[in-house]
Length: 248
Ligand code: TZP
Ligand code: MG
Image (cartoon, rainbow, N blue to C red; front, side, top):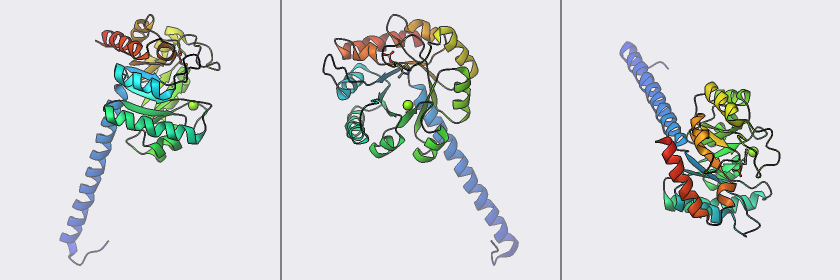
């Protein structure tokens, strides 16, 4: 744009433009740092499920996860309707905010996560690409992607995932279509191929989690180790202690 003030005006224009660019770049770095920091606090990540045997539901699992000191909770229900997920996500959002400090992610559904104000979403290989989810959810959202191989992990990192859910590491009762377990060697191979935080998943419990951290995981995600425990809050507390002992 031409200004009526000649050369001096042009210099001011350039300075203003540079200043704006610097502010945008600084904001981008700050948001990335904030996201990276959030994603790194994923030592103990509890995923909800309904337990038919005990009659306990998603909100019971979240209550136990918060009381027991989980870093993150994920609402996951492949059977629920969008409306049901939305109602649950609203309640979980309230619980998480009242507690403070725990990250809340929704499995699969960017729309539900956005509508309910969740911190982020966890995407599988069949869900929206992470770049599209980022456009919809913005720079501050925490976006996780499931990876079952080095190739999937590398692609997800390149496309902008904040963390990876890597697995199944061991055989799991919770996901019939989970594919062949990677084992600790597979997990180690993924660790060597990407830099973003890795949350190991699949058949992880108090007895085997040490090996998972030794293989390079930054955290563990669990369903049955909590949902199938007689006392879920106690199970989360025990896992918390064990995770902290591994992470030092
Ligand atoms: N993705 C890979 S394995 C798995 C998911 C959702 C299930 C994990 O459940 P569990 O009971 O902790 O093995
Ligand atoms: Mg999915």
